[in-house]
Amino acid sequence: MAISNILQRQLELQQSRQPYVLATVVEILGSSSAKPAAKALMDWAGQLVEGWIGGGCAQAMVAQTALKCLQSGEPCVIDIDLTDEIFGAGMPCGGSMRVYVEPFLPSPQLWLLGHGRIVETLCEFARPLGFEVIVNDAQAKPGQFPAASRLIDDDSRYRQLQPRPGDYVLVATHHKGDYDALTQALNSPADYIGMIASRKRAQLVLQRLRCEGFGDTALARIRAPAGLDLGAKLPEEIALSIVSEMTMLRRGGQGGCLSAGQVAAGVSSAPDGISVSGEGDVSH
Image (cartoon, rainbow, N blue to C red; front, top):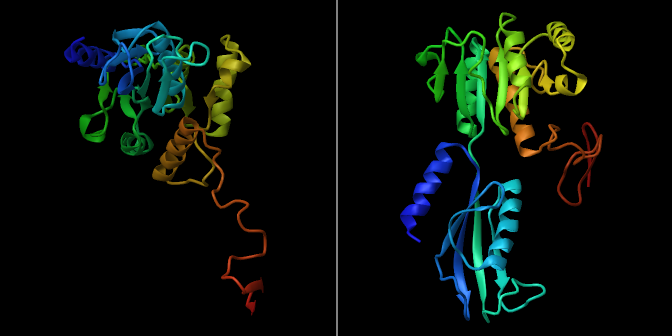
């Protein structure tokens, strides 16, 4: 196995935005058919793409771990017993191996449809948070969106909107393209579909989509108005509330205050031996 083959396949998987796992043998104790530094690439289904790290049972154990790593997004190290036929790999090699399993997940794409200060600020916020930003709007100019990886300005019906699982869509088309954009988004596997609109406007749009055949399950995917309730009023504040909602969903957060429940109502934190019983009333 040439390392160049592994690197070439990694590059191909990255360019096609496919998740994969790289497994590397980091330690061998005793006898093993694989050698230290042996590597294998596995795809999103745990299937071997390139390389080799040992026989069938060892590979099966690594594949199971690969699927778990892809789900969690976290790497791990597994120890494989090559002598235990029941609880280990079931291979009579007389040794053991340690394998480092590392998932590689494509950066989520954020599709911004429309223009305005909120969209411009969202582009600025999203890039450092790990999103690959695509702006689709006839009025989009490179100077407005320096953080965008791609600008689309010739797609008035949003036919180029093709998000994949794990991607995010934010519609800010100011009524002119709401239905086309949302229809295209609902027919995609995007993880997040948000819309910038007033509550009244959002209900009108959802009602029309319902009349066009979308059921309650599909329409429940649309977050309208998009964002967390931060009391936002300025465009920059609204953008912050939206990117906060995206981050919450991406990381599995709840959106509550981290300090909630830490301090009982009416009681403040104080050094040991000092109690605070009320405003201006401090006793030892």
